[in-house]
Length: 78
Image 1 (cartoon, rainbow, N blue to C red):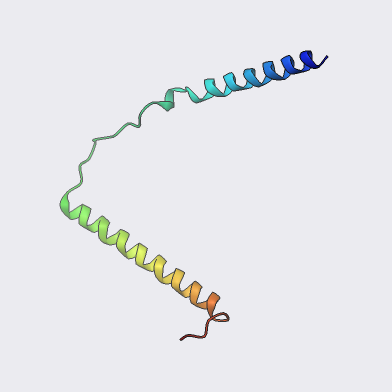
Image 2: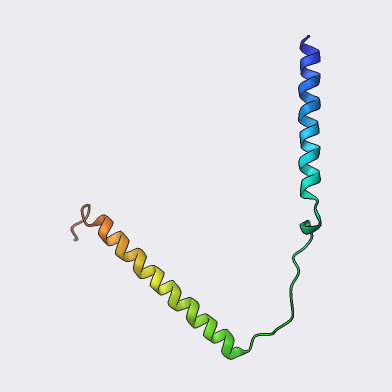
């Protein structure tokens, strides 16, 4: 009885693994495609860099403000 149960469990586990393996091998599993429709100029690149830097600074200020409010009750300064 135990051998039948063990065989059934092994068969079911192997069957589920083959289904998972088939799902991963879809057509979208290949290497990512790079589009070369538009190249970016130096000015556009600089503008995107400035925008990303400004966004990061704003997020950092928001984070600092939250941490200052959060730690106000814990730390009173040195």
